Image (cartoon, rainbow, N blue to C red; front, side, top):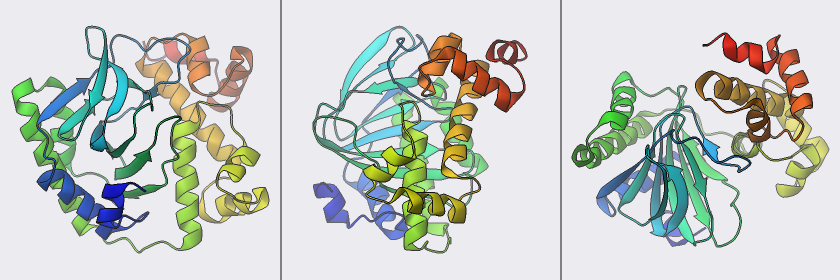
Amino acid sequence: MGPVGRELGLEHLSREGFLRLVDFLLEQIPPARVHAGRRMPPPPSGVPVELYAYPVFDVPLTGGKHLRCGDGDGVAELELHPGEVLFSEPFAWKLPLWDRPHELCCLVFRPECIRITYVDAGSGGRPVCGCFFHTALPPSDTVRKVAGCLAAAPDEARCDLVRALFRMSRAALAEDQAEPPGKARITYEKIRLHLEENFGVETDRARVARLFGLNPGYLSRLFAEHGERGFSETLLEIRMAYAAMLLRETELLVDEVAFRCGYRSTTFFSAVFRNCHGMPPGRFRRRFR
C-alpha cells in the first residue's frame, strides 16, 4: 500500500477508510482539471483496453497515471497528476500503460452500486485491485443524472460537477448501513472484482487460485457459498454479458469482440455465444440495429 493508503488507514471494504479517502479527494486534491474520455474513435485492434458501460472516474492520488484514450477527435495520450481527473463516459475506452508509479482512486457508477477502488501501482504491469468499497444500494437518481450530464457539459463546468458528484458519493457512503462482511466473503469479493477486470485475458481457476495464494478447491467452495454460480460459470457469465454489450453498443468486428472477451478463437467464441444467447453474434447484433 502506498503513502496515501497508509496515511488514511485504508482497508478492503472499510466504509470508514473510504470515507476518509473521499474526504482526501475533496479537501487535499480537489478537481482542478477534468479530462473527458470518449467512445470515439474506436479502440485499437488487438489491444486489451478497458471499456465499461457506465461512468468511470480515475483520480490520481500520487505520482502520474499514464494512459491513452479516445477524446472524440483522435487518440489522446495523458499523464494525470493529483488534481486532475479522467471522466470516461459510458462505452469510452482507455488504455492504462502502467509505466509510472502512482496511487489511484477509481469511482465507478454502476447501475447497482457506487464502487470506489484504491490502487497502488508500481512501475511494470497491471496491479491486482484488492482494496475497494461498494455501496449496498444503487446510486440515487440525482447522482445518475449528474454523472450522465458530464459527457455534454462544457469544460468550464466539469470541475464543479465532479466536485458535486464526489460530495454526493460521500453522502451515499456515509448512509450505507451494510453489515461488514466476514473474511471469506471479503476474499470472494476480491476475486470477483479480479474476474470483472481481467476476463479479457486467458485465465482459469488454477491461475486465479495461484494469484491469490489459495487452493483451487477452496476457491471453488468460495464461489459455491458466496456466489450465485461456480467459478467457471461466473467467468462465462461476465464474458458473455460483456460480449452482448459490445455487440449492441459498438461497431467492433466479431473477431475483436471475441478478443476483448478473452477468446483467441472466433469460432469457439461464436459457439459459446450461441449456446448462451440462443443465436450467433451477427444475428444478435442485427436485432439491435
